[in-house]
Amino acid sequence: MADPIDPLVLDLVAWVAGEPRPYDEVLAAWRTSCPRLAVWEEAVDRGLVIRRRAPGEVPLVAATDLGRRRLAEAGRSAG
Image (cartoon, rainbow, N blue to C red; front, side, top):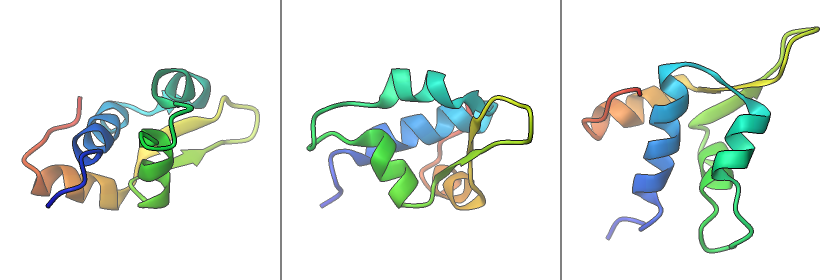
């Protein structure tokens, strides 16, 4: 049986795969205080998204290569 959080994790990955998003925007949209619905934390722990920061720029969240593969396997597109 698939984990019920999986579709939400893929939604997050698809959202940042379309274009990297500012870290603050991602946390505002996806962070939750519910330990049973930890979408952001699951995506990071599974290696599907990554936070990156170039010197002098806003930190961004982007899909990893693994995240993009998982989207393709699920028949999902970046968005």
